[in-house]
Length: 59
Image (tube, rainbow, N blue to C red; front, side):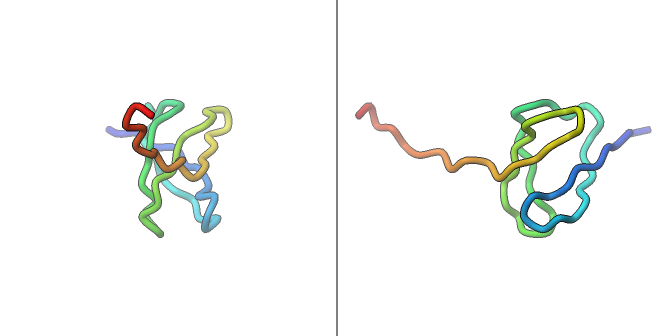
């Protein structure tokens, strides 16, 4: 039996089902837009658009 929790998609306002063992910092794909969302809090579960990672190349 897999338990799930829900969180609001910050871009669409839709409820997203997440695994109950989700952790802060985890990246989730939005089912509505495909955008990467980051879990930023657990109580309540809060999602934000994940930052774009840029190449550093040692500069």
